[in-house]
Length: 109
Image (cartoon, rainbow, N blue to C red; front, side, top):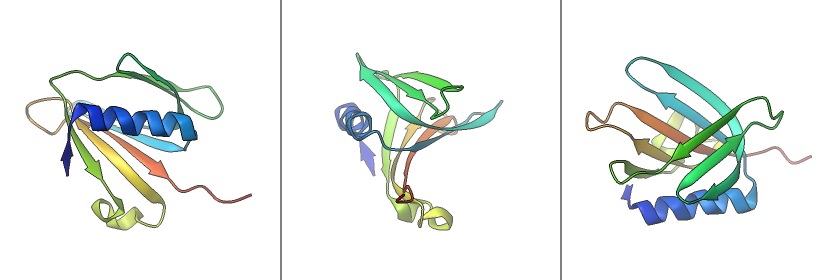
């Protein structure tokens, strides 16, 4: 389901406040990468994601050219048991360059 920038920003803020574990998958025509971490801050349309061991990080700035799509576990049936919800960011007009943020279920201690 497509959502606006304001709704995407609200989701980033919730993830920051709740310090939830996210998996961030970057899929571009020329490279792919994945990172697990938590939103350490979201200010001025910029998200800062840091891994729990603090060795990896990602900064992401929202722009008006991006398209945002909300994703629930049904969007990822093979991983539905571990995903709470997600956000797919389309970064180009081709719609095949994406950044996917997935909120992961964490085991209770």
